[in-house]
Length: 105
Image (tube, rainbow, N blue to C red):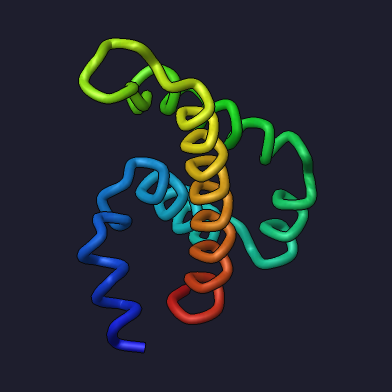
């Protein structure tokens, strides 16, 4: 368990902007709304579309993958990074909102 926590901090996941945004939105949702309202917010597909749009803009504007040392964009790897950033944003928001709802507030 401790090795997983150390790995989580040492790989830089905590400093990832999508994680920070998901963490912040989860804290905001758990502070602002009760549990039933948070459940209903995560049942709307619009919530996930907004998260995917934010991850899309971030990945394709600021976090592209280049081929080797050239200025050519590696589109398949950039798309994989977009998918992983979307999942990170959504999962961190969900987990944080319910953890903070249950234990902190």
